[in-house]
Image (tube, rainbow, N blue to C red):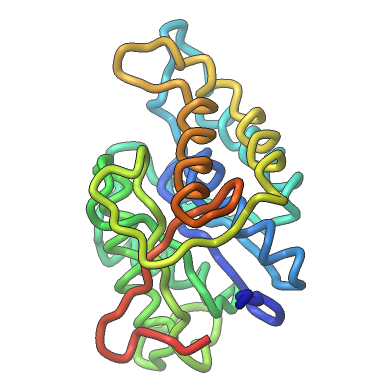
Length: 236
């Protein structure tokens, strides 16, 4: 059995530049190969993820890194422009993300798991849950028209697989090298690999892709869970 993303519009809603590379870029690449439209919504500016030698205008640097990575993937890119550590489930944030979902006409949203380690990831998860539900509501007005139906929502694996029980796996074996090329665009964050408060990102991504692949019987995989709340699950 093979899942097809043909005719879908798949949007990853992530907290930081480089989160999509770590957790769902392989699935986005597979969706694009199937003929789907793909997009990435980066909610924060990445303005506080400084290496030991601080970078001037870090938010501008990280935006350019993300643009380069998204171009490799062929993804449409959206920015939320919230500061690191200040992302929260607010009315302003909901409106911003809601407009992005409607602009892209999303049918499937990939979002952080609510139990991931980073506060920004957890806030992004709450926002995605709320906004995917309201995306089809005519009572929630934005510049773009409501969707015909609420998009499906998949929760992505956690960083380092901590506390995440996969519901299913997507085989990304054919796209693992693209994930690495995309991650290599984020030079400002790769420079933090030796920081005591950080992790070597490439090693982390490779380990996770291979571990999930081993669990699924393929070379590389990404893990997800469906949002199985009332009226939120979809048949595929």
